[in-house]
Length: 558
Picture 1 (tube, rainbow, N blue to C red):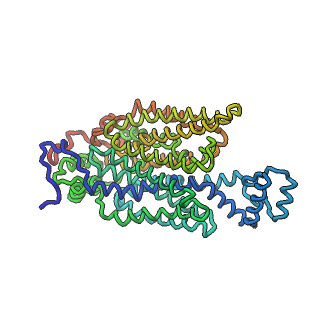
Picture 2 (cartoon, one colour):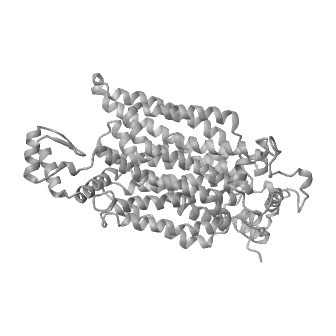
Picture 3 (tube, rainbow, N blue to C red):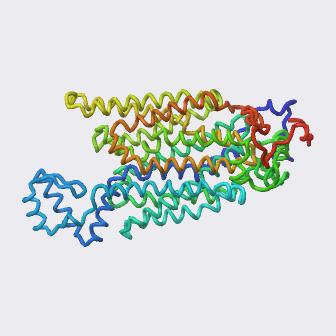
């Protein structure tokens, strides 16, 4: 008695796609321990940002010999006298300030300057991205050496270390612990983003490959929203509890580690990389829910026959093979566009962005959660749309919407600084919130999920891990540059910062319109052929796709 339903269709390609328990469970577990954590750690530093910066101020003041309790008394008395104090900058009658300082024994020369606090905070945020680049560059080696499944198990210890460092930051009175936590989080995220996207692409039936691939971005948005909710003042976003936000990383990772052994390895990896056809067949049967998987196995055999060897495809081969240069350019530019569209500046610095739009401070946390909720909802909507509308329309039209939103936002933020329109400032702030949400909707529908899906679709099996690694590294590099530079861009350019993102989006729309093909419902070979790159062009290389005549049938014709 078989565990699977044999197919009865004359043409296996016409049969309905089974949403089997194994497929759904494997997708859920893969994204929980990887994509979800990536999104969570993008957003976790956002809501408690001011609390953590005050923690930095306190620790370094005390390390320099100051008394933080006296400093707090000084601040309270300044407020009661209607004086102002901000990161060492005092604006009041100097003689009264000096008298109060002497009375309480507060030496303000021991305080960090405002720019020093901003630099420390930018380093904390950007450390995640910098080491994400390192993880992305090494992800191809991990994916091909250990496999997609074992690779995800190997990297879990990195996140457990990150959770430990983050959790002890306040007890140890050490901002360095938090920075170390962000370093390990970045390393894990750089590895897991590539591994999760590869795994989802390789276990998915062709007809729903886009929808399954979108689950990667959906889990990222759920992770961002979860961090925003947990970071509210009513939950963990308090002076005493904020370290638990970083220790929380261990919870979904533990669930992933317990459940992951029950999920199959990628059939494509097993057959094409390991030449383990029987194991690939068994894994495919579990994922599809029927015995007759010969059509997909035959497609893998043909793809395997095209491969140069069983060895791993190096980054050098990827960059020097003429046939792969254009898809590599497409893959990298899509990832550059995703980051330099400004999305992670929105997510990581939204507290400051909404402050710039003069949203009341006590409402900013809830506006941020609203932004995250819209992001999740629209990504859910993108799952079925991915197979109905295709990749190109969901890239082009939402990106136009994003560009227009930022353009209008530039106008209304500038109007906020017009004193003649002071009575309309609250209205302008609301319009800015709406425009930011429209921007997030556009990102969630297209530019969020599609770059990862397209990168996994426009390469055959052999160079796919290397291509995913390189393109994801570009993603992290651009993210790092943006995270480090955005606070200073915001201070220097003000509202006009968003014009830079608008220009990048407009240029990307033109490139995608002319050069990026549709990949919906196509096999990997058909997608490569649509790029016109199945035959060598330019100088000779050591890599050559064989002619069709060289590929002798090894089973039923696909």
